Image (cartoon, rainbow, N blue to C red):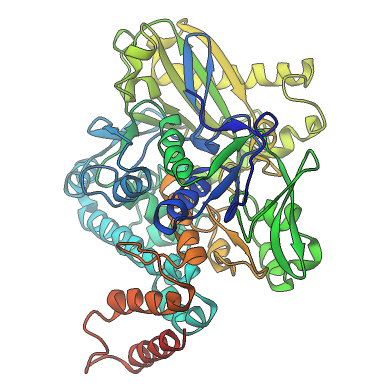
Length: 570
């Protein structure tokens, strides 16, 4: 089932209220929210020939692979992410739980299981490290605290400028106290056991930086996201885009693939539309970029319109790492191969940072990590759709410099040297898999490797980065907001929030709130004059549930009163 239509064959007609550049989860969520809760007619433009961004899938005869969705947290009954999905897709998405052990950390020949449920997680970790129970309890509590603080931090990015100026410092303060520290720094404050530190940081591939470089806030949000377990979309990752599309289309919107946007049209200082690669233009009073910060301000917007403050801040934040992704197909079932839905994180040693440094200095050094996902075993609809087959995804880091010399070549026409390079990497990744699952040796039917050049080609990220901006402490200091300094132009998606489906989904909602004045909770449509009042009301309920308290500190009381004044002024 194909989602959307080709822009080349079905040129959209009529007037649109908003244009979204990119059909990743952030763009789709934003478009759906604007359509369903604000009645907006939204045009989604995607450069790839498939809608969905990292939620799309690709097929080969007898097989299908996801390219970016390996597991999701908080989509069980009453989960916060599930609630968002249900509201934005009319409850059409279904999710299947992964096994009780959702992640298995393998360090050399030692294995550690991440089990569903915070209490059980603490018990299991304590069975591995009996002397560290107190540190493990404090770790879980800290991760939850950071995740809670993050709600207010990111909400501030959707506020009108006046409200942000008044309430922003308070909303950001607690989260930034964690975001400014590295994962390694915080974990060393909890325990001196290097093996425990390595185990707790064993999901670092989910955000792309080893412990010494990553922000602890990012690490904590990922860890907390999965404490309640993990799930996978029934029907595969592409079911996500298929669920959003009808909501957008029912309100007069359209989703067009093969529609590469080359620039944002700015007239009299305001964004008024976009220009596409074929020279055509599409106009709307609101333009929303889900193309990432680097693309938006480095390629789509005229350079002279990017504020100096933002250019200076971005100079201190690098793009995230690129990856090799190896897609494997087997002519046997998951049961026959002994595969379950448990993800594997494979590490040569507990010295993650040292392993990365050695790998960057010497390409022949061991791969610092290999992530193994088993999508066919996670999706209960797979046996019916692809009987007698199974799939495995392997992911390992790849510096863009390793493939940069082939930048000017074409996809599928990069030459024999490139293919030989990929063949060597494929063998190395397979060996890592065989060490963990020796029964798979000799069973591979199909093996196809992508590199950061594939990401660059399809997603447009300049250096093939998988997670947009790197999740270092500096990232969270960037002056990023849903509203850009250019009137009419908005940011959305993962760069506005964080990496991952839940992060991009949240980014989409933040932008919808900013662009249309959708109120948190019920999200009714409000007019522009009441936008500030609605935000103030939401903030007051979050931070001062009973209004300014008699025992409130002077900072809290002053902030509450200031927010109320701005709200009344509209």
